[in-house]
Image (cartoon, rainbow, N blue to C red):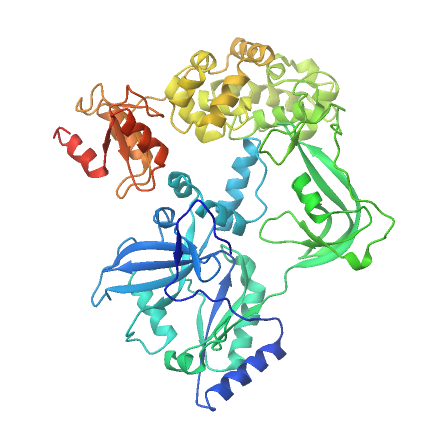
Length: 608
């Protein structure tokens, strides 16, 4: 764990110690012998829980109210991420019930469920961003974000596993877990009391074969002495408790030879290196290739062709290279030098400031970029032309029939009959699918066009806000920034996209083909004029509303949403963890800053 400079640092009341690790039955037997000796052979039982691969968190409650969430950090002190923790729905903001102690601490593991992580990576691919390497690092990065609304959007979860307070009434760790459950904390139901080491080993074996079925990554089992008095009797070493230990499952990894590094070019021009491996069997499948992410990763690993590399298969389906076996390195080989020209079209690669990936800038002449844009355009979330597959696109492209999405709408039956495997019926089906796509809503079309950083959600917001493609194309950066969900990076990307003559020409051709470029989405039905002519900027996280709900309420009642603070703004609606720059700017411009409660009063017709 590390401390960052952007969050307040808080000392833990009780240090968050790490656990000793074991990797074999023999080591567990040694641990069990130490426990027996430390307790003078008094009877004891164990409590077993799965060890989840997330980010450890300490939650402090005063009078039943969550007052602080702190990361593990270095174990002595961590980052105060309270505002971000409050967005995690499985963490209670308030604990209700009988005999709630005035002060208590709960520890848990914050994680990103596998399906959320995979969906996030899919969304990033859709908008031309690099995939995240693993769920744990993504969780850690998410907890350290400055924008709590983005944290909320990422749907983090938390399993709690420990309760601490003075004068605790419970006698065992198991009773503490049951108490946390009655207080509505989220506890993984995979725990089990084990009467002896034999039962502990059975628990370990049971989950080793089933852990892939869980919604999150687990890398082992935590074994604790169950009785709290016995925990105290056993005590601590400088680094870890003597009454608990972790058993680590073997990572699903292996070693194999790196034969080559090849480079893939995506539809946005991003160049991704791929390790070409000597085929090896790993986690039930034969692995021939593994992800290397970007140039930084190749430099970090200091790869040489011919190296024996360690390959791991985690929760992500794609295997990755995690290290090099330096003992087997041939001294005569040299470090891999990243390509400087596009492997597909030979154009010199570029790398934007602050970006990890290199890009091929030859947007309209690089074959995989062109094919990739067509594949993106026809996908289900865009134009939904399901009778058009990758092989057909490859044929259409190589024969020069389709080099842009607009060309699809010029295809005739006789063109298709020239393709391998196409008969009259399959040609008719494809033409029907292309015709049907003309009825697809504007937000799908905008997403399908493939503007960098414009995913499905942003496309929906832009079409609802601007109504027509012409309004989007002619919008200034400032006007784009006023749309919901649009930040500097997206505004810049959309603005630049429509400055390109090739892109504008493509849009004109798609218009002529008859695609939808006007939004039919209606604004929320007006309920009152109570906020008429009033403008709002919404920032931070709110107790009773999501930001989208607040936006809808304001629009339904006659108000307008702006994205940035200016002298023309009426109200800055401020939630928890609002960025300091917005507040300072509002104060300087004498813009009214209102709380959630003030906003509710406004809605009731009370002036502010």
